[in-house]
Length: 439
Ligand code: URA
Image (cartoon, rainbow, N blue to C red; front, side):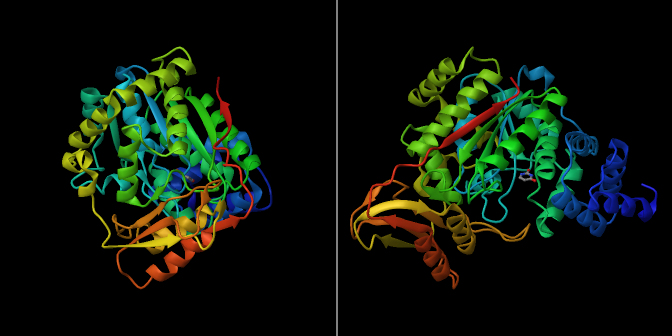
């Protein structure tokens, strides 16, 4: 990029609703990656995109530039490799269940996960509840493990799509996350650079997600499918409900324990449903089965035989984790106190605001408000009731696992406020809201 002047021109053009060429976008992104374009200009540019948007060609160019900013893994020797990604939600531990199940069915699962930010949890933080689990594999270690056991769940290495790493941190600090072209290019640049052939994306919709309504979730899904197709990547997006937390556990250790329960076939119904749907789709996309029906049967068999759990154990051992915690989840870090919330009267759960529960978990220390902050793996929330359940007066509806900090009282109040009650029967929420796929 030719000094500051050109960046200003591009920012101003986008601010005024104009279009940018692929070359201009590439120069801006690569200039930012190497430090020629400063943070304040990239932040201004992102804000202009939040307001003015980008068309499909601009979004494709932005993604391609972010991919070109770093290395691209070559996984061609592993056959048809499949990846899975969620746009982020509260209590979403699906990866921890579905990835080992799919790998146990013979597909290569290569998963680069992220950390939690704001009220949305992160798979890496959850896995780090297991003593010793390494999330910082090098590219060489990543490839060797994929070869050896057919599954890796690690962090994004700095050499893959570094422009996204830098831009995502900047967007997070400047209120510029919620723009469909920025989210779509951010997610897809990482997926393309990470080298899988197919990706199953879970686009969360609701108060606990970036996409608050189905219309914008569909738009995001279409944008990501279009980017995938342009880069030869097979993409399926499941649109799933995030108005209430997924499963019952929210918080790192608690979610690992719930994932293990689910691998044993005894997890909450919504987590089990999402695992089956995503797992079957991953098996179809990895060309391990002909259709969804056979995929579902294979996932069910991998749960029933214990093969999925055995693969999870193998994954944890391969990445240096303490397998005894997987065998006996009571050994996972545990909060010193549990505050039980009991129903004031007999009624039905009408709503559980996922964002409120997520924010409460951050207050408890289970999540971070700023990048790089330490977290407390022990704390979180366990919901004993979900939308549609009838709760008798005095019956527990949530346990709040607290470390004994001053912020605990606020967090407990927030969990209480997250629940809405009804004297009349309430139907359970629909979990799977739609599907958009490249084929
Ligand atoms: N997840 C990402 O990886 N990027 C975004 O911009 C939003 C969610």
